[in-house]
Every structure is written in C-alpha cells, then in structure tokens.
Length: 338
Image 1 (tube, helix red, strand yellow):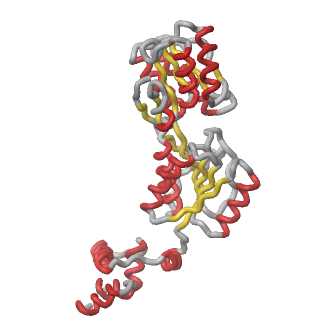
Image 2 (cartoon, rainbow, N blue to C red):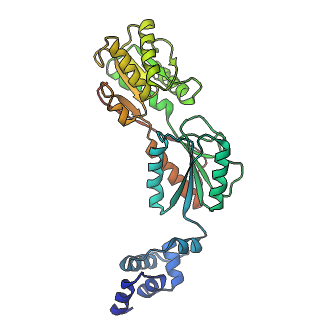
Image 3 (cartoon, helix red, strand yellow):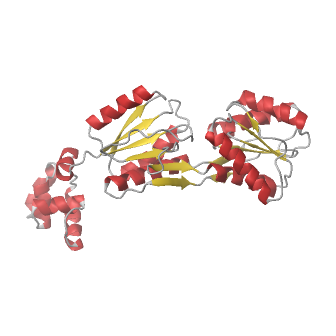
C-alpha cells in the first residue's frame, strides 16, 4: 500500500480491506486475526494488529457479530432496586465486560418473579451472549431456568443448583476477620448483634463469629442478638446487651447500619468507643461507616471483586470454558477508629 493510499484511508474510516492491504494479507485473514479465530502464525496476527492500530481500525459491532455469531451483549438482572449491593457489583462487572468489549442491558426485577421472567424473555429476544444475575441477599435463589441457550452466572446471591456458576462472598470469613481484629486489640468479652435470623448472611456471620472465638479459647458474650438491619435495632440491642452482659468489651455487628446504631446506643449509655468497647461492622458502606462516631472499622465483602469475577467467568463460559460451582471471594478488614 503506498503512502498516498494510506493517507487516503486515514482521511475516512478505515475498513477491513485497508487493513488487509497494509498488512499484506487477505480480508479473511484480518477477520481471523482480530477475532482470535483460525490457525494463524503469531507473526501474522501481530502484523494485522499493527496495521489495524496504524489505521485506527476497529470492527463495527454489526461486523463483529456477523463474523463471530455473537452480539457482544450480556444481560444483567438484579433484585436490588436500592442499589446498595448491586451498584458495586455492577462496577466490577463493567470492569470485566469492558476488557471483553461487551455491552450490558441492566434489568431490575424488584424481587418479582413475573417481572424477572419478562426481563429474561426480552434479553433472550435480543440474543444476548450471556446473563448475570445479581441479588441483594446471600440466600440461595432458584435458577432462572433449567434450560437456557446462554450461560448464566449468579453474583452475590448464589443459585440453589450447585451445578450453576455462582460467585459469593465469604460470610464466615468476614466474621473471622472481625473477631480476630477484636481479639488482637485486647477484647475478650465479645458480643454479636445482627439482622434477621431468617437471612442466610445473619446466620452465617453468627456461626463464623462463634467458630473464630472458639479458636481463641473464647465464647460469645451472651447469645447472638438477631433483629433487623436498622440503626433503630442497633440502638435497642445495645441497651439490651448492656443489661444482660454489662462487662462486654467488644461487639461485632452483622452490618454497618446496625453497627452505627450500636455505636449511638453505647455512647448514649456513657460507654466510650473504642476505649471501653471495640466495635466492628460488616459491608464497608463507606458513606455510613466514615460518618459514624467514631468512624467504623468494618469488613469489606469485596462486592466489586465479586462483580469482576462474575464477569470474567461469564466471558469464559461464552468462549466455551464454563466453570460450574460456587466461587468464593474473600473480604478484607478496613480499620478505622471504632
């Protein structure tokens, strides 16, 4: 290709024929090289990619779809209409899908099975390459369907079918991180205040706390207090706890909202935090944890990483490499002043 021809190609949008001419190969070879298909030498692929970069060529979505038989779109169905859990998960999914040059259709089912089935039909009508299902609770949920033409990955809320691909948080591991921190800061009379016992996350975190304490030769101070995921419950539970176990020196809470209520309740009872009682929450909801008095030490469940892992696993499944089963993402402790 002459310099003048290259210049003319760069004054308009370069096409696959321009890339082929510059690389000295056929248009079919360009297609295979840019879409990762065919048995080409790496030298040829590199030459084609270099020519495409020089011309600023990128295949249109329509062209890519025709060449690969894919739409380069995925569907995301969420049950979290408030966005507390779905937004960080979606950020992680977007990071992963961006690398794969995929677009996403976001659908909110609002915990309504009929609405969910409607969204599923519409996504399949659009011929999405795969679907991610994101929930706001860790309880196992029913699969979308027993027989779908595209791969599905469940994020945060796992599928009840162990053969499905699910990416979940490490609930007991989160409790272990909180208890280890409290013990290492000198606490020995540690209580646990959490949400409804009907929620899997509340039960798992309570069990994890008891297991971690046992490894240190300790027991939970009093029984776990199950209630709601609210500040009101946290304040009420703090007062109840001080009446039943007045010598506590540490509290692990099932989420940050409860922990903030507990902090207020303890402070209103004349307890200094963290001098007299250390406090650790769960979730690392920064806007709330940082505004607590004192700022709240908490366990980050790794929601963005859950989204990234879910996106990566879905892309792999679309490429013919599924990874069924439950994939666990471990959290990390965020130390603040409580």
